[in-house]
Length: 409
Ligand code: SF4
Ligand code: SF4
View 1 (cartoon, helix red, strand yellow):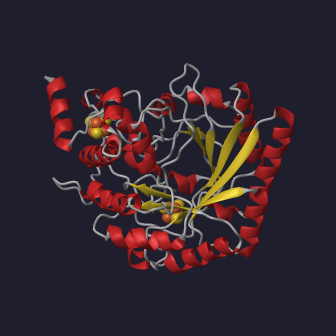
View 2 (tube, rainbow, N blue to C red; view 1 turned 90 degrees about the horizontal axis):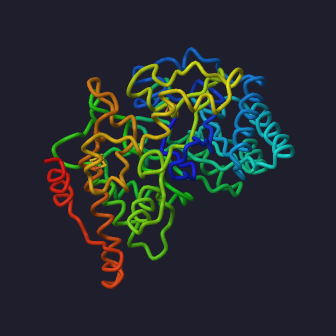
View 3 (tube, rainbow, N blue to C red; view 1 turned 30 degrees about the vertical axis):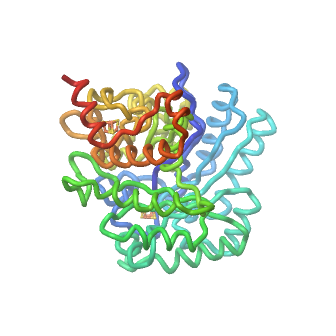
């Protein structure tokens, strides 16, 4: 499933905290997206997992997470139903987790929150009613109009999934749910078409994701240019000139907020801690599992909710690395004037066989341009005296690259 998760990150503490668990409630999927890191990017370990999480693993997962939250003094803890396709686990399985979390809430006072990330193809009236009753917020994976979505988001019979996803989407809207959308960027397609299509659907938010890539497996459209930034900047232009923004876009909000000195981080950008764990269908606790797109098997830790606490798992080297990914930067990133906004990018995008994660993001040029231009658009709206007081001045991509080069000398 997709990444780009946000966990209301705090900013560096000595006791790592987890605020969000991605619960792999089902390990299989009724789709077979070409770019799926679960099945189609080299790591096949998902297929060795039980198809559906057992009651024992669900109960242990909830107990571990809620007690961790209580010991950290958290008011709430978020569970994200994930997969594979999580709806394949069935409503009874969802209800088991929700009921268990409710019992722990009575005991510990920590409020459980719930989301599901789904391809929506199984989203029927019964599911929508249940999700609305349980207060589960919905995220739908959709890559834009049918001609774009069905390039990569296909069934096991090589058929496009768009029609079924839109049927599920429409059911959700009828039931008063207002899902968010996760969209993987394809810069060979029209950003205008994608924007207007998403706008017409009326999502609560859209997360635009860079495709899983690294130095060993470079982005498909990697050129000397900045195709991903250019595509996103066209979307930004359309979104930013709306009188009322029709949906939230976390990447844009994050760059804009951080430019103004307001802390805002996700695991894809920024300087916060990544306060997220993944719980596999068999109970194994790991880091966010897109890392498996970089190094097959890397997300396996041997820690399991049936035997280990979340605290114990957070001490594992790969979880620790992921947790502090935006603080442990390579030399280039530490010399970069926008590292506070960028944070070196997403950890798995930094991977190379030679230097492991000790690299700038493989999307560095795109991130540089994206951040420089959005930052500039924010700065240009501020009065001169505010700019002076805050010591803010616009930087072009060339300014940023020059600053990195000067510091390195
Ligand atoms: S919907 Fe697509 S990307 Fe998500 S788990 Fe299924 S195959 Fe993978
Ligand atoms: S823009 Fe590039 S060099 Fe700067 S922090 Fe991001 S990845 Fe590192």
